[in-house]
Length: 408
Ligand SMILES: Nc1nc2c(c(=O)[nH]1)N[C@H]1C(S)=C(S)[C@@H](COP(=O)(O)O)O[C@H]1N2
Ligand SMILES: [Mo]
Figure 1 (cartoon, rainbow, N blue to C red):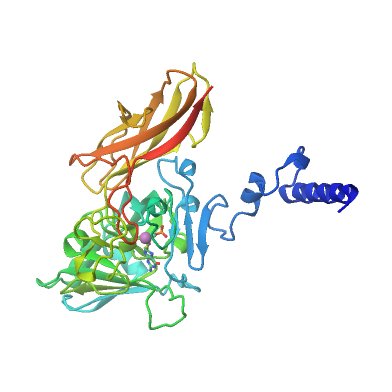
Figure 2 (cartoon, rainbow, N blue to C red):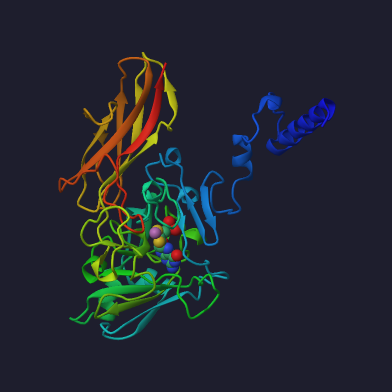
């Protein structure tokens, strides 16, 4: 290629870059090869009108997207920034007026159905701020790597959920004394298109179903739940893997044994009952269902890579959550965990709501630092600094979150 031709190509590339971001890319000719404009990414974004274009899409069939840590800074996660974890294809043509759920199962006193309107008018309406976290959040860190969506830190969010208490509805149906477990079925479609296959059908032990904060919800942050998050009706269980919180809820079964629906067995949402060395093959009978999720925290401000002047204090902020009663302490370290300082932590609005932490961090000299955050809950559980126990599917990574900071 001649130099002239190369120059022409470069110029037309800059022109098309400028077109795509809607402004002249002033130093476009210096853009190194292989680097995309950040502005381009946010302009094109994803194809999901309900979701911010800044979400990071891991997969589009089924749809899976996580929220970059610095976009989770709000006290309550806005609907367009709430992560999406689908196992199948969301239902189309959702008819809210005719939406019904049916409760049945071996341990249900009878089979009973409710329209959405009946749920709203027959039972007390309640709201709770509840954190949902996918059991696989943080999977990308495990080694040997685990198959599945390579979630980094963003398969978590905390929203205000409004609905009815699941226990009020279950009691209205009648629960037999031999009830052990609850299972859900949603209206989503298996990737194969086979109507006889469920993308997922999980559930929780009865004791969890009967907690005050366990909901059948129709509203998220006082708006309709986005279709991708389960509109018009979903289950909400704080403190358990979010996979228990069935979306597009159609049916609940009260079981006289542990629910055996899709993704309740094998290595799905199960971990070795006893710790194993990384890479170990674990037999089915040595795997246990994940119930309570471990204590965890996330730094949401500043964004990793922040630069600060030596004479300034860095405002640090984030959230911490637990399946026990509440977070009692959040600490940060700037010396790779050698020493820790306490953050200010907000009160919990209710169980399973995440709590906000903040601190002003001073640095002793210019250079590269990492800020690590570590939460401790009211049961004294705390986060490991490095990866916790390896497991075949890479669940429950609650290692301390880290950000890089440069002091100049
Ligand atoms: N019907 C149905 N419910 C579902 C799922 C699904 O694919 N179908 N995914 C589950 C999983 S694995 C997670 S982590 C949460 C994610 O909820 P969100 O997409 O609203 O963040 O929904 C759970 N409920
Ligand atoms: Mo999940």
